[in-house]
Image: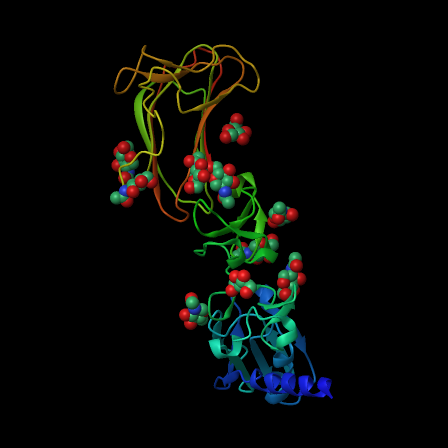
Length: 341
Ligand SMILES: *[C@@H]1O[C@H](CO)[C@@H](O)[C@H](O)[C@H]1NC(C)=O
Ligand SMILES: *[C@@H]1O[C@H](CO)[C@@H](O)[C@H](O)[C@H]1NC(C)=O
Ligand SMILES: *[C@@H]1O[C@H](CO)[C@@H](O)[C@H](O)[C@H]1NC(C)=O
Ligand SMILES: *[C@@H]1O[C@H](CO)[C@@H](O)[C@H](O)[C@H]1NC(C)=O
Ligand SMILES: *[C@@H]1O[C@H](CO)[C@@H](O)[C@H](O)[C@H]1NC(C)=O
Ligand SMILES: *[C@@H]1O[C@H](CO)[C@@H](O)[C@H](O)[C@H]1NC(C)=O
Ligand SMILES: *[C@@H]1O[C@H](CO)[C@@H](O)[C@H](O)[C@H]1NC(C)=O
Ligand SMILES: *[C@@H]1O[C@H](CO)[C@@H](O)[C@H](O)[C@H]1NC(C)=O
Ligand SMILES: *[C@@H]1O[C@H](CO)[C@@H](O)[C@H](O)[C@H]1NC(C)=O
Ligand SMILES: *[C@@H]1O[C@H](CO)[C@@H](O)[C@H](O)[C@H]1NC(C)=O
């Protein structure tokens, strides 16, 4: 007897919470999700748009569907209709139509209630509580689709974890879980030297050249970023001065001790992987401004100085420095300057 009553109540709640309004578009249109991963499946042999909408309603992950009366195919998508685009179907099919479930806070009143007190088609039971379905997060009033790369965020849960996106504390945007990966617009792809490293300068056996200014515009998909400068000059010397990185329109230099005016390489990371001689040092023998510069005259192998700093993803930075070389005198020389997240 008691059981029946509970079922009855559950039944009532069930009815109340199956009420998402479905908005249908005009015919001749199809849904283009913002990411191909959102397509949950394609069902064939569906007789009507009503049947297709019922399939969507039955799937807790489905928020948008596309139906084609000619091919009788029904496509289900995770994205809300507003997160993707509704486009003219091509080849033009007058028989295709898109339906979007309209999600409003009234459908989510059971959020965070214990599973035993309510049943709700828009929520799932995890750890005895009703929470948002996979690939969505609670925004305070409804469950919304997790964000893709380069979107502003505060918490990891807001980023599409099943594409290995996390919320970077450094940039407050969704980024790939490591700087070995980058968001290519669709997924986190493995960085290649070509894609993720920008070669600012690479020259071998340069003739003597007086102080010369170099500057580059740089923008990236992840933070922090490392500026790496590497020199070798078997007989002569390279000189480097006034290294700067600043956001366009903001004069703050993100490089510490870019002019080597401390008289040493404070602020820089130094490595000499091949253990060659004549290591790079700060010097007063030559400089562009101030009283010091950095000189790289490592013999038979290159050494490296670098700095790592935070940038705003997508913002444009001016990377600049001054360089001088006294020649090669028949030896080998190389300057190799790169920047990468
Ligand atoms: C869910 O409910 C529990 C217990 O009432 C509460 O501690 C927790 O803060 C709630 N979480 C959210 C996201 O509302
Ligand atoms: C949650 O998302 C919906 C749909 O994007 C929006 O209308 C609503 O304002 C959001 N709620 C909060 C508290 O951010
Ligand atoms: C991510 O979610 C989508 C949609 O639910 C699913 O098709 C896909 O297999 C998931 N990927 C992983 C790696 O879990
Ligand atoms: C934030 O920056 C630090 C170094 O500055 C880095 O170690 C860390 O991985 C970054 N975190 C994220 C989530 O990007
Ligand atoms: C980071 O992402 C890569 C693929 O993008 C995945 O192989 C790896 O397991 C992820 N690591 C963590 C800690 O999530
Ligand atoms: C991202 O990489 C995947 C796998 O290599 C590829 O299929 C897709 O076209 C790429 N997306 C973009 C926008 O380049
Ligand atoms: C300039 O950049 C620095 C370092 O990122 C930052 O602290 C400062 O607020 C910025 N100034 C302006 C006016 O944006
Ligand atoms: C980048 O920013 C994060 C968070 O603000 C901080 O923890 C980290 O130390 C910074 N990294 C560098 C290299 O400044
Ligand atoms: C970049 O910095 C260099 C050196 O300070 C300067 O000459 C150049 O005009 C700057 N470029 C931009 C676009 O701000
Ligand atoms: C230039 O330096 C990068 C490290 O920043 C290194 O990976 C690359 O091999 C160097 N190129 C040459 C030609 O030495």
